[in-house]
Image (tube, rainbow, N blue to C red):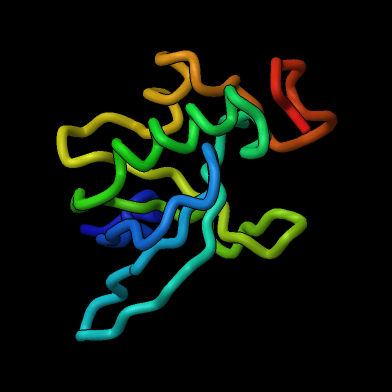
Length: 123
């Protein structure tokens, strides 16, 4: 039996990493239908990409995501102020990408509300 927790989970592959918390995904919607989504990862914030810490975060995210089969969970039609889908991404080994990035020092936990977390390199 399906539950609401099962909804809005898709297979995906990263097409391009924009910065340390934003990625373009090729999302498999099923039935040979694909969508290309501009996504911001939910739950954390990375430094701005024009900074040294931001460049490192972008590379770390790229190393995690590129060429991996991913699972992406959206929160219904939740978007950020730029229209990007807010998503949770799970790696093939079951690790959550946002948690992995925070644990490795490439960003800080952030719920997306209020000011950005105070971190070096944030624009």
